[in-house]
Image (cartoon, rainbow, N blue to C red; front, side):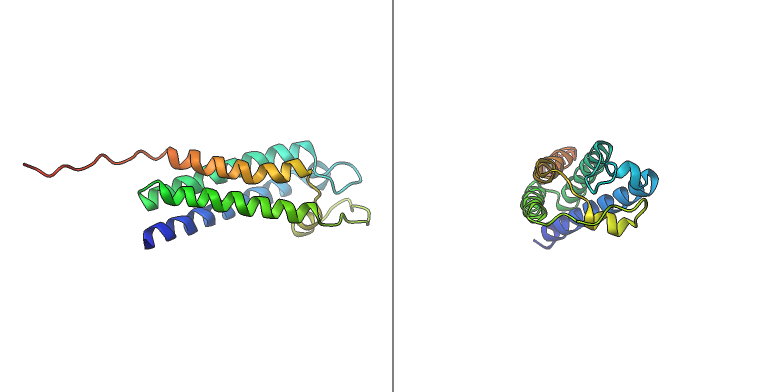
Length: 152
């Protein structure tokens, strides 16, 4: 039981570290003008593509780590469910947030960008689903160990 719980927690931590690190690196490499549409806090198409790729990599690796640690298929399914529910809850919260009214500066910190970015509602909803599917695919990449039969 402890192994199963640890596999879900560690799978989620792997995902969080990859998403935060990957998107931070992407933002620093792209800069404000490429991450956002001109004179707006709306994220650019290239940012949406990069975020999708980073999110999918994170989900695949999170599912893989969870399955490797758990050695069974149930904990990664729990992780996938948690990712789906949290993703949809975060999407709902983001859709109800008020958009910034001040003009976007030419440059801004990563933290400010994360707080003020406006992502289309359909992308917000898709992130939870994409994460869920990615975790399940990642878990499926782990080969099951063959049953060991007792020597006769």
